[in-house]
Length: 268
Ligand code: IPE
Ligand code: IPE
Ligand code: MG
Image 1: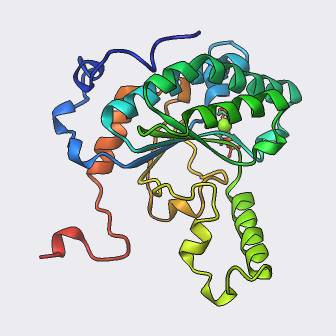
Image 2: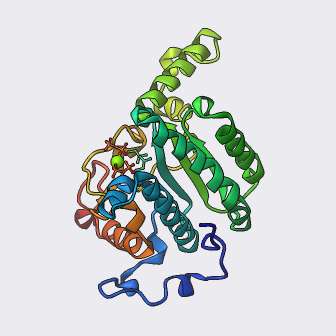
C-alpha cells in the first residue's frame, strides 16, 4: 500500500489536470484557499461493508485517501490540514478494531515519514498520546521531532482527541497556573483558553469537511469550530478525493461569512 502519492513531482497544474465533468477548476480562486482545512474522516467501515470487506480494509483504504488529500492541500498552499483519526470515544469499539487502527497509524507513519519530510510538512498531534500503545506513541513522537523544523504545511492529526477532554485539560492548566500565581483568574480571556488547547498557535479551521453524510461534530474542535464553514458529503472517506476537495473549497468560496456582522454585500 506504500505509494509515492505524498511526494511526487507534480505541480498544482499537473496534480489538478483533467478534472472530471462537473468540477470547474477555472472557478477556483487560488487567492482565497482556506488557511486551515479540517477533515472528519468518516465512513471507512460502511465503505468496506458495502463491498463485502471487513472494516479494517476500509481503514486501509482511508489512509490512501488521506495521502491524496495531504498532497492536494500542499499543492493548494493550505497552511494547516487537520484530520480526525481517532476520538476519545472510539475506544468503545471492539478491541480488534482499535488494535488494528493503532497498528495502522504506526505503520503508515513509518512508511510515509520520508515523504512528509520531502514535502516539508510539519506534523503535530491533537489529543492525548499518553494513552496510545507504546509503539504508536514512540513513532508519533519521533515524527513530531523529525518534522518540527519544517516550514511547509502543518498536518495536525487528531488521535485520541476529544474536544471536551481538550477543554477540561485547558481548564486544568489554567487552574494550575492560577494556583502557581502565574495568571490572575480575572485575566483569563479567550486567548488564555485558546493557548492551552492542543491547537495553540494554529489558525481556527475555516472549512470543516465531514464525509459519510453524518450531520454532527462527534466531539471534534468544539471551541475552534465557532465560525467554521461546514461541508458535508455523503461520500465515504475512502472515496473522497482531490476533486471532491475542490468541490468543498468552491462551496466555501461561495459562502458569505459574516462572523456576526452584516452581510458582505451591504458593507460599502
Ligand atoms: C472513520 O470511519 C474512521 C474512524 C473513526 C477511525 P468509521 O470507522 O467511523 O466508519 P463508519 O462510520 O463505521 O462507516
Ligand atoms: C468521528 O467518527 C471520529 C473520527 C472520524 C475519527 P465516528 O464514526 O466515531 O463518529 P460517530 O460515532 O458516528 O458520531
Ligand atoms: Mg463513523
